[in-house]
Length: 310
Image (cartoon, rainbow, N blue to C red; front, side, top):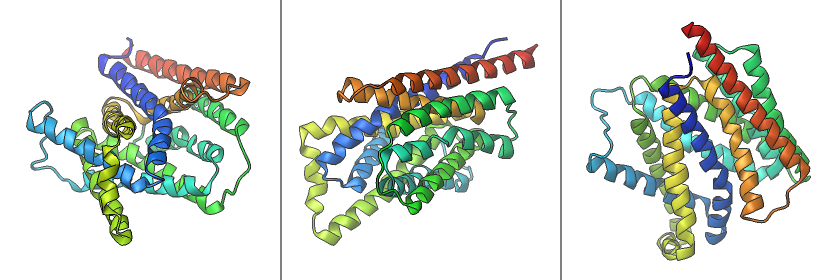
């Protein structure tokens, strides 16, 4: 038998989230330029807007959420991992490590997530699946290694980024585990609310310390700023996280994790087509290797489903 409808939707959701995240680097760069680097302001805008939208959809009964009678502690723990701790560790790492080296470290996500799924969730992973995962990671490594520019990378920055990888992988495992008692909408809303509260507190603390609170509101009035912040809040913070939560409901971690490397291809294409950045041979070769790994891993997963159904 072929992949069932929910699994096909799970793959589509994860790929969609990766495509959305692929463009996030470009829009984050533009938004931070407008904000003069005020990262916590940007994160606050993103998650406050996302939370308000979800609350409106809930009030209008366009989405259904019900937290009554459920143990919220694991949901809160998941929400603190992603987006709160992950964004903090990733930001601290990127500040101390060159962009290309950060890409190399973050490329380890599929491997760590797959190992977590096998060890903690007892998911079945074949040697062929591992091979295709490593192939996709190799493509990401090639693109980032060839783009490497020596800089002031520190060991502390590398530790922060590796911590972000483990935090993000733990989130993925918890999201998969909690999918049996919390719907994708409920998990997404918890994450949006946690991000809104945490990053808004950090933003206002900074402004109050420097007596610049008016900047928080005046920045939102700039028309050129609105599209990047709406893309990041509605696209990345809301839709991409919802798609990831949805895919965690229907796909094992080992099946979904390899699809995350497609955001590298999207980021490269966005840079080339929109920002007019140069295109080199290693972009093409690395992209082809990533696609080969993703397609191969998906085919292996499909054949495993067929054998189970035989």
